[in-house]
Amino acid sequence: MTSTDPTAGSPGGSPANASVAAPDETVPPRARVFSGMKPTDGVLHLGNYLGALRGWVAHQDERDSVFCVVDLHALTIPEAVDPAELRSTTRAIAALYFACGLDPERNVVFVQSHLTEHAECTWILNCVTPLGWLHRMTQFKAQAEARESVGSGLLTYPVLQAADILLYDTEVVPVGEDQVQHIELTRDIAVRFNRLFGDTFVLPRAVVPKAAARVMGLDDPLAKMSKSIAAERAGHAIGLLDSPAVLKKAIMSAVTDSGRETRFEHASPGVRNLLTIYQVLADAKVEQVEERFAGEGYGTLKKAVLEVVVETLTPIQARDAELMRDPAELDAILARGAEQARAMAAPTLARVKAAVGVGA
Ligand code: AQP
Image (cartoon, rainbow, N blue to C red; front, side, top):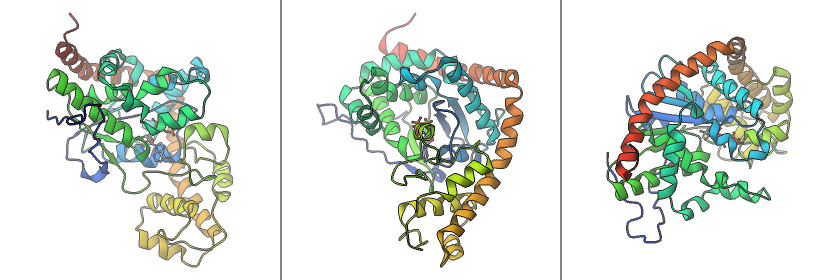
């Protein structure tokens, strides 16, 4: 374990946030990896898949990975919580992990709230996290601005996220670009804890995919594709379980412009978003994509995107339907995952409690 103090020379407690997210392929073999997704607002979208899940699956043989459905994070806006729906969405997200190719035999996969360690560790980390660090989180600012009343959970959930990550001695957190600031905060919290109480936590870093680290909304290419917007607006996202008809409507209506520019560098945001989706799903090089669509209208690009999206999602949807037919089996897999996760998280929490002088 190593630590550098991000608050050194900064008595106000301002984090240095010195680490910068690296592309996903820089991860050393057998690195401990942790990541998760929140079961809010229904199923996952293509941004979740390309920004995170696809990479988790692609590297599952090279890494020592722990993946979680972070259901406690879904409580930050309590007015929006339907308890029965949260429980079933949590299971549905886990099923989608497996349907996308994540193997529970090769990875630890579990539901966050099945362990008490995450919430317990969060309290201790809350006590070492300066309030100013949390107020600076751009996701908090954006979400707080959009609501009249803001619960303290919305402010402090990045600390819960820090506990999620640190409990597993995580070295690398594969995420989309929107989560990088939170991983940097996690690192800063770990450094501060290590400075106050002695070397306890491994310092994690974020890695993001080289392309499609930020997939944008089809209807608004200046906003990132997001579950919560998708729940309010048809045509915003490409849902992983959307039917071909729904996909066709959303993709063919994607916002572009009145020109014919299909070079990545010169394209407008909506066109660049479509080009990127195509490039990643077709596993093509930038030059190949530009050559294919040179001189073509956007209708051709949209049809090609639709084709490659349907081709990618059809087998995922078939596996998902099969998995969802046997909820008892899914629950059994997740119960085994929780046992494995507990065996990893409990010793870390014991180390944390010993460091601060609490616990039996
Ligand atoms: N648009 C995106 N492009 C690339 N990656 C994305 N991720 C999310 N949106 C995009 C990545 O998906 C993972 C899961 O994120 P999450 O479920 O914890 O919540 P989020 O980042 O807040 O995702 P959403 O879809 O926008 O959810 P809501 O609307 O509920 O807040 C993360 O790795 C994230 O980077």
